[in-house]
Image (tube, rainbow, N blue to C red; front, top):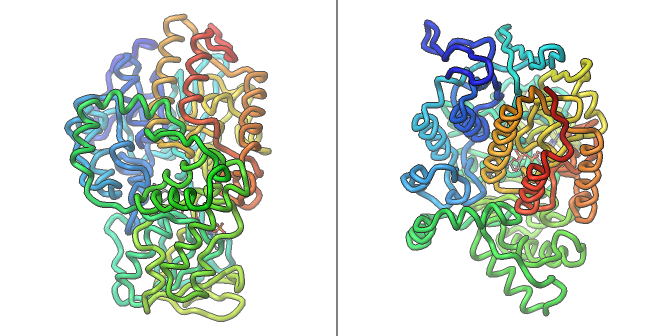
Length: 552
Ligand code: N01
């Protein structure tokens, strides 16, 4: 792709058939997940020479890495799919309501083929340093193979949950059996047949994998620190009539998603949980539980995110379901969450999770009562006893939202380190740009709806906004854009204020950075809603990129 900014040469291949490293391009994008892929497609379409740097050997981002048993999307596939190409959305058929990781990865590869993306992606290439060159008004990006690429624009499309973390526990490397992290699952799969297996962690990854590991392993022991609310997916075949109706007018359906609160079309509730009688409230929860899916209960009343008393009614309804599914009342009680309001930690979506504890080959260890002490050569020690295992699965999550960005040593104007700037919590304007870091964009960054939304909708919105921005700069003959400190301060305050009006800050969640020791306690995403956020972004553009400074 010849650059319309620099006049660089078209991309070519090296001796191994990999794209040869262009050393100077208009745009470097880090990450070939759904965000990086769409950005590449858009930017190339506008004539920008673009190079995507991807540490994996293939496209797909989170769906490339998270291959644990049971991994599947907790947003319906009809919603969790690209909307930018009418032919693509018509031709692709999802085989289940909630697609599995292999199917979503097939979709990512299909998109890469269909739009010929791979020729501008350098796989197995990590980024270590990115430094703003003030004189040249360009980013200098150093990769882990020692090459340097320069680019006018630098986009971190590194995902919100891509920097995995192991548990902080003594002796973690002492264990002689096999260890796995759900976020880095072996590509060839794992056969647990005949093994004694431990799973540490009961977030979404643990809750999806536990039922399948239990079916295969000789014995499974689950180590739970904090119980989570999990809702049944009621997965199955997509409803053909519904699918046909959506496909008959996909643009209208997509538009509803873009204007919605969470990025999927769903009617907004009109009543508070405390405004209705017990019977009506219960019927609403029961119907959402029976229907399955994540959005139902949380979106059933207006006040579940803001009123503890209202939230308690939903939380108690779910605890009742857990008690009715799990045969052993003591085990059921350990599985009942009491320490955070429903929805303030990301609820999980499962198939047979709670029923798995009725199996004779599954045990649950309550780490609140008997804390983890250390790993040994042969197993795990809690304050109560030593457990022996053949394999241990860490389902212990991620350094969310800021981890992957801060893994790169990013330095802006005057050598300002992003890690230092974000020491007390991330500061962004719209979750898109950072004052002091011209021409650096973050996709679904902290301060945007991102993880509180259907990521596909938020990714497309950010990719389109960023592309629109660089097209605008080219039209203006501007070489750089930067968020002003004032606009950033106001946005950070707005994000905090909106977050504080909800129950979210009450939970020790990864939304709050609470799962990473030493991470500042800040509510990371923007809870104002996908539709309202999009309108704010659009108004800022219409107002001449209000809050941004352009320079020539
Ligand atoms: O990670 P998590 P995850 N000792 O952080 C426990 C998305 N996702 O990978 O709560 C003992 O939620 C920790 O305990 P606690 C989704 O957005 C989506 O499961 O900190 N336990 C917790 O139980 C999700 O929210 C899908 O007390 C320790 C667990 O490990 C996000 O990714 C599927 C520990 C970590 O849970 C992250 O989910 C999968 C320790 N030292 C994931 N450290 C979809 O369906 C941690 N834990 C799309």
